[in-house]
Length: 265
Length: 76
Image (cartoon, rainbow over all chains, first blue to last red; front, side, top):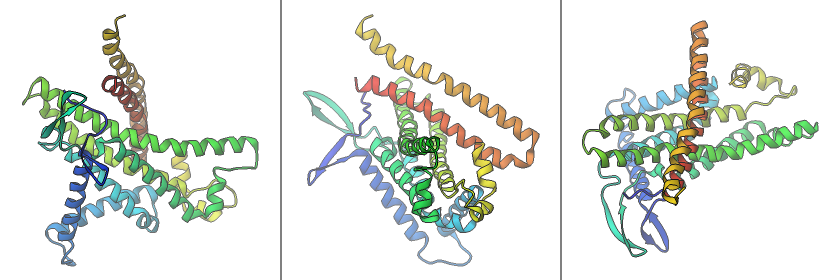
């Protein structure tokens, strides 16, 4: 059986290896671009067809973001990157279930052995993609925090020189920000890759019968992982705009539900 | 113990033991969450959001164990 954790490179362009998951990521990118281009070509006030579907997606996602931030202005500010995360991860997860992904491939000679290399592989089943998404999410969270609070107030959360205990807590907060990259990356990668491996092994055992309920589970897991990634990024962004100092009365009053709700999480 | 036996046991035990505590944790958290919703149905949305979030955190730990098991099996 040909299961490998690292994505296999199919060919090289100017010395840069192009892996099978990169190919599928590009296909998803082109598909989404074409879809939105044709959906928004002639914008009507009462939407029909593809524009209707896109507006539905935008409205649902905006309601999701609103339900955590309770602040329409802030939601509109962070909405583009969160919606991008959601749609990109969702379509990449689901594309890994399509027939042909993982089964159509070439046979290469590697170290003297004949190895089957699939031509297509889900984009998020590659650790590179998920680490990139994790880094992008954490950088976005920092940017949202810094632009809302200002560099010094945001930095005071991590470098708190008022007391030795505060200093250690600040360092641990900084460490936990870095750990989030790993947790984002491995949560997404583990779920999608394990789903792929499960489908391969089941198809190997009982070809047409056993994988069917697991395809349904894979659809569900793909959706849930995209939702969880987006909601975690959303919650961390909302938490990044809250400080706990007494000097911060206006911001605390505007978000007085938030610290209470998120502190007890 | 032969190396072949160890090669098969290692990933299996990793995921088997590694998934026990997250399973218990999710069960406990969901039961407390449902209890809270039952006591205060108006706060159901907030409780649900927090519940989904924390379940995602805990499930990630089980996924870490799974990834280590996969590495142990496929990357020798």
